[in-house]
Length: 373
Image (tube, rainbow, N blue to C red):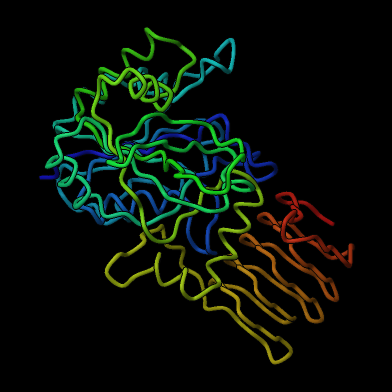
């Protein structure tokens, strides 16, 4: 039996991805054509032998609930293992009360009933690979109270601006958890992932409410860091890491997986990324089509030119259309002789009357779900 259960937190209020988030939480965003963002944290836990997972839901949960289903497609095979969907309290007088801690408090009985001694807390808007079986063993051996996962970056001045970072001493003792204001290019970005005993977690939830009803768990950990009453260590993550914290980062994260080195790191034969499968026919690429450097999902019909794109299931790109450097979500349609460059096209959008949409990679365009252009 695993020593820990997993918690996947809902998307924090500070994350607001224009357009896409109007229809679903970041956890339900399509990623790399056939996956959802939530598939990566759940697969990390499942591959680490953690088969009791609580997923916290908030706004627009329908698509995420539908995708998660019973959770059996995440290779959770034990009799007691399950993916449990938990909802936070709705209808706050003020959004400041709408925190992860309020969701944990609403469901505190479900947390108390978990028989595992430890909890692994993960975000639902970040993509990375992490072996938690090894990390949990290191955490227990170290004797610290909390282990916090971070990723060192050299582009924090322009990226990860909705994330927090860790300040640490030479022994990686965490001194504080600060907001990234982009005032320095090198930061140890906190991956909203930590390990601690269940008893400590429940105690922190209680103390957070007593300290401030508007505080998140991370803010409470920051308070504890500064008080110096807990042993809190940072652990450096290596490999692919993406935080989907704005529209541009969603675009960049998808496009980066067109690079072979990035793809090899996150998709490995010994580390399956599980997802809900959708049965459909293979994609049809006609004699008039030209496809280069792209990911094409099942059920597509490609008759035009596609370069450097991520194409979701059931997309139709008509003859004479040119689509470059773009992300097309499932069942989008691109009509004849339409040119798209650096666009994110949401599900079921149909572009046929507007013949040219061109943006820049640092500010990709967004086409609304079911829109007709």
